[in-house]
Image 1 (spheres, one colour):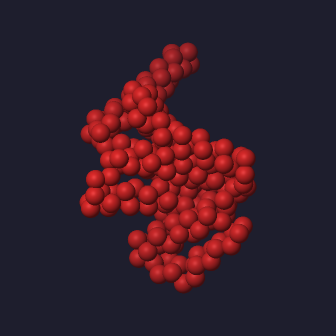
Image 2 (image 1 turned 135 degrees about the vertical axis):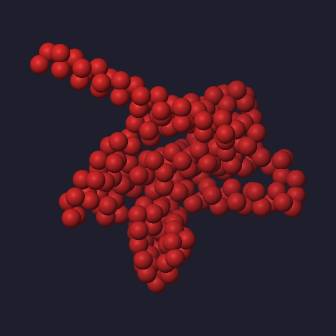
Image 3 (image 1 turned 180 degrees about the vertical axis):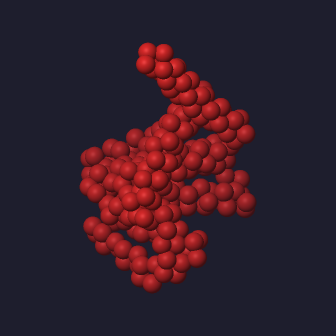
Length: 233
């Protein structure tokens, strides 16, 4: 039964890879396009991204901060899934959280959701309810870029040294799920952080269109190969 479930999961993951690739291409193309057209307006974001990279290379990896966010992501996903926290522990090199239930979202949450970035966006939006914070938009973009770079760099590092979380549902399947959700999360972050530059309806339509075109292209190619094979056999 477990072997059958693994085969089904991996087959679904393989089928999903073209859609993920098409969506990722569309999001990054749009992101780079409006970033370039915005001139200096979005430079603080790129400055934040670069500053974190330089910070990590020149100084150290803030693993304890990352680990706290990692375990907090497990905990938040657990609470949203109806679980209770039994134990929460964070150390310099590792951490753990014990919950009363588990599922794939709880297990993989830290690799899919940049929790510090979401906290930053929530705080910025809430402050906007009480004051005019447009003057601080540049600082917000800097911290946004810094936090996203922090999440991306340390998540890649953590995955590179091996994580038992990925083995629960299979490494390949887990990596595909992580990639898929990260694409969705990145799109959501784009809409939340750059509301004047991103139209969610137009973006969704373009993503859907490119995914459809990708699968149509693959289907046409496979059909032509199959017809050619039949003619020669």
